[in-house]
Length: 446
Image 1 (cartoon, rainbow, N blue to C red):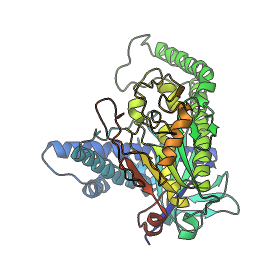
Image 2: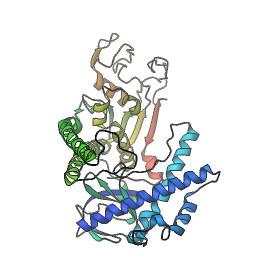
Image 3: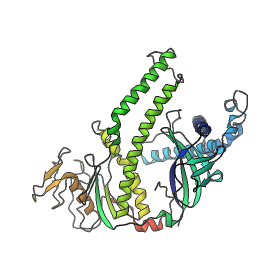
Image 4: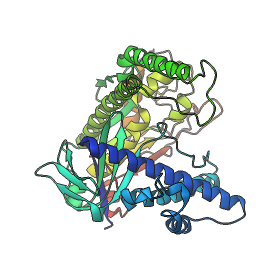
C-alpha cells in the first residue's frame, strides 16, 4: 500500500512581527520564481535545455553576492529568510513547465508559466518538515525564524508531517499542513449504503434522485451590493493616488508604483475580506454537501459538465460561478476515495433531462427554459431536474438506460441496446476495490 496524504488548512493568529516576516517570505518566493522563469526563458531562447536543479545550483552560487540580492548596505538580505522559501519555487516552476508540455502533447489548451506580480498572485511560501513542530494541546505551530505561531484549531490528523505552506487569503494568514496518515485515518466509514443520482443546477444547487432539492447559499448574489460599494471606494482611493502622483486620468507607465495611504490599505483589505468571505461560504456549503453524499451512499452518479463552456454564457456565468460546479467535482472525487464510494460520471452527451425516466422516450424538443414536461409516449409528467436525477441513478443499477452516442444535434441520439448493467458513456472514478489497492498519493482537506 502506498503512502496516503491528507492536508489540513488552519487559520493563524500571528503577531505583527510575524506578519511582517510572512510578507517578506512571500515576496522572496515571488522574486525567486520570477528570476528562475526569466533565466529559464533566456536559456531556452539560446538553444539550451534548462532544468530546475541546474537553475537552483546557479541561483545558490549568486544569491549572497549578486547586486540584485543585496540590500542598501551591501548585505545579502536572503540570510534573513529561511532557505525553504527560496528553494521551493524551483520545484514549482519545473512542475509548471512539465504540465505545459504535457498539455501540448495531449492537444489540450496549454499555458506557459507567467511572471508573478505583487498583489496579483497568490501569496505563499513553503516550509519543509525538518523545521516544523505542531503543539496540538496549545494550538500552535513552530515555524523557522518566527518561532511559535498561534492556530485557531488543532491539527486534525495524526501521522508524519511532510511539510507546510503558509499563505494569505483576504486579510488572514493560513497554514496548510500535509500529513502522511495510516489507512485507518485516511479511509472513513459510511453511514448508509444507498445509490443516488445528483443533477446540478441553478434553481437548486443539487437535485437528488430521492426527491430532495438542495438550495445553494449564493453568497456572491447576497454580497453583490456590498462588493460594488467597496469596489467603488477602492477605485476612488486609486484615482486620488494617481492624481497625487501627477498622472490624473492618464494610464500609468509600466512599473509605476502609486503612493499608498492608510485609507487605501483599509479599502483594499475590506474588499479582499469580503471576497474571502464569499469563497468560504461557498466552500463550506460544498464541503458539507459532498461529505453527506459520500458518507450516506455506496454509489453516487453525477454528470461530466462542461463548466468552462457553460461559463461562456454571459447571462448564466455569474450564477454558475456562485454555485461552484468545478469545486463540487474536485471535492466529491477525493471524498469518494476516502469513503469507498463508487463515483460514476455520466458522459456529457448523456441526455439525462430529455429521457423519460418512466419509459425511456427521448424528447429532443426540450429547451433549457422548460422546467417541466409531459412525456408524449406514456403521459408521465416530469420535473426537469428530478427526472434527470432519476435517469442518472439508473446508470448505477442493472436497469441502466440504453447506450448514448454523441451526434450532430448535441448528443441527443440514443442507440438502442439490449445489454443492461454496463453503460458505455459512464466512467467509474472510484470504487471500493480501487480504494483498497490505490497506491497513489492522496491529498484532501477533510
